Structures are given as C-alpha cells and as structure tokens.
Length: 441
Ligand code: SAH
Ligand code: SF4
Ligand code: F3S
Image: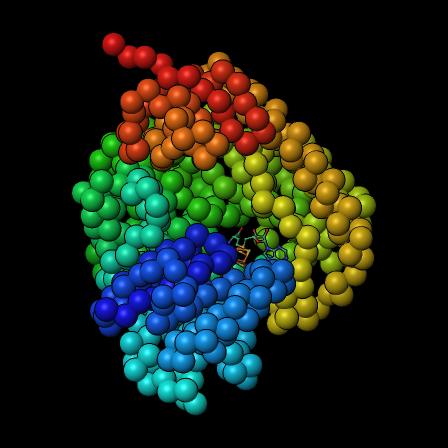
C-alpha cells in the first residue's frame, strides 16, 4: 500500500473534499496516513479566500518540498482553491508535481500515473455538473459522530470581494437521492449528526422531469432519516433564506436550531458595494423572522472590516447591527483584496491597514462582550447534548454541542461519545457552557 498525507485548509467544504480525494486515492491503492514523513504522496487542499490563508500555505509548500528533496520519489500536490486560482504558476515554482482544481479530483489517478520527476501534471478544469455524488467519502473526523455532506458545489453569486466563484465555478446542486442515501449510510455506521454543506444552501435546487427538491424539502427528507440523526447546515445567505426553510427547521426536533447567517457589514452602502443583494433592514427582518419562529435559535455570522471606501459611519453601522442582533459568535476578518474579483478591478483597497486593524479589533471586542452575554443568558437552561468526546481541558469531562451549536462541557458520568445526554447550564465562558448532567430515573 502506498500512503497519502493531506493537509486541509479553508472551509468545511474543503474538509469534505479531502474525504472525497481519499476515496478516489483508495481506488489507486493509497491509504491515508497522518504522518507526512511516511507518505508517498503529500498534498495540501488549499484555500484562497484571504491573502493570509495563501501565505500560510506557501510556508507549508516549502516544508513539503523538503520532503521531496530528502526522499526522492515523493510526490507533492496542491489541490483545491489555490490550485484553481494560480494554475500553472504553481508549477513554475518547481516545488510541486501535481496541481488539481476542485472539480478535477477524478483525474487524480490518471495524473498520478503520468507524473515523472520532470513531468509535473495539472488539471484545473471547472465543471458544470461535477458533484462527486457517487463517491463515498473516506471520513476523516476523529469521533465518528458528526459527518459533513456536500449538497452543492460552486457559487453563482458575485459578492465583489470574493474569490470563491472563480475557484469553485458555477453553482450546481447534487442529486437529492444520493444525499439522502449518504445520510442513511452514515447513520447506519453510527454517526448521529450530519452537516449539509454549500456556499449558499438556500439556493439548493435539484430538478428532474418529475421531481423538484428545494432546500426546505431536502431538509425534510434528511431529517426524516431518523429522529436520532441531528441535521445541521451551512452556509445560509440572508438574501435567500426563506420562510419555508425557517418553518421546516421549527417543525423537526432533530434539525438543530442554529443558523450561520453571514452579514459582512451593517452598512447598506457597503452591502450594495459588496453586491450582497440585501440591505441592513432586510437582514434585520430575516433575524426577526427567525427569532419569532424559533426564539432560542443560535445565530452566528461573518463580518468583514475595512472593505473599499468604508467610512467610520459604515463601521459604526456594523457595530450597531452586531449590538442589536447579539450573535453567539462570529468569524471576523480584515478585508483582503483578491486578484481578479470585481472589487479588485473596480474599487481601490483604500482603508489603511492600521484603520482596518483598529476597526477589526473593535468588532472583535464587541463580539466577545456579546458572546459572553449570549452564553450567560443560557445559564439555568436545559439542553440535550450530543456527546462528541472527552473535553480538551479535562479528559474526565465530556463535551458536545447543544442544538443552538454552543459547546457544552460536563462531568462524564459514565456517558459515551455518540450518546444524547440532558444537561443543565451552571456557568459559562464566552465560548463554552459549563453544565451538570440531569439525572434521569
Ligand atoms: N458563502 C459564504 C461565505 C464563504 S467565504 C457566504 O456567502 O457567506 C467565508 C467568509 O470569508 C465570508 O463570509 C467573508 O466574511 C470572508 N471573506 C470572503 N472574502 C473575503 C475577503 N476578500 N476579505 C476578507 N474576508 C473575506
Ligand atoms: Fe463568496 Fe458571496 Fe458566494 Fe459566499 S455567496 S461564496 S461570499 S460569492
Ligand atoms: Fe477557501 Fe475555497 Fe472554501 S477559497 S473558504 S477553501 S471554497
């Protein structure tokens, strides 16, 4: 058996893609290893979303190249979004043997066979219909409890700051039956939670001559696999999240009450420039709708600080929106110009770095305070938690998430990974609920 080592960067979709790649490589006689030193094939599944993501990966490419020098015959590959963005420029560095884009993983066997020391191989063709629907991913999660299922690929939005439509190609939805089959399959293997993945899950749409499945219908079908199987999903787009989806979530106990709803900015002027296709009022209305149907729904977001021409007033609008909504947590970023995007072509990246950093820090400080407030509000509440494993801090404790996605830590009490347990929150930090078991008799 040959051995393959893959490091994964970027979003959860990449995590799932790595699992698809391992499955394709298994057909070629490669088994997975977690040690780069013993691997015959060393790869990075990469992310281009921000410049610092790419810089980090460049550092790893140097390390991989050392392996190649030390152990002749080792193949180094760059796959994923950076492969798609930089294409043969990556080969020019002479540090890699293989460059494969997100829609070309089926070519891996052919490319691997064709590689020689002076013949690197590349396939970065994007596809209109590739969804890897028939490939059973080799699960790489540590606990066997929670599995990712990609339901669509690519993105048809053109948010002006974003490189994803260029690295992942056009949006396409995967065969609904293959998604439900995969959910059944992981449930039979003992998994208790699936997370349905897409850049914009609300625009999921799968049509045949006699069937049309939208995201709400897909949720119903996956939730019907078993009441013991929890269903999560990401990412929702504020312009597309429908009342039907919100009501479907409310109708099924096993659809977790958590929505990741990236706002990006609280200023309608910035949102327009970002081409998000909603404004502040629309976003707040969606939040109000979610909370009216599911008062306890967890809400999280992504925020970008210092987008092109952002003023102090725009920044204040982001802060006031965050204050008003009170997200449980957020991913917060300084705007990073990505070559080729609409923003890079049309708007100067004119917010000085020190201003971006200051605004980002203000956003982070505000969110830390709001997170603590949100976690404190849960003290005294009871939750059903799906046990994911021992807590990192104290191996005698267990951890797992409540429906609203907040991490809970509690004394083990003989419970095991993959069980559902009832807990009561007794204390918290800004990122963890500290709980006691509720003894059921
Ligand atoms: N499809 C998702 C987001 C995918 S990218 C959505 O539409 O919300 C994940 C996050 O990275 C984005 O939500 C955004 O906050 C951030 N991001 C994307 N491009 C960026 C850029 N050029 N600079 C800084 N942050 C960026
Ligand atoms: Fe990027 Fe916008 Fe698509 Fe999200 S919806 S991946 S931010 S273009
Ligand atoms: Fe990064 Fe590509 Fe995901 S750019 S965020 S790995 S879709």
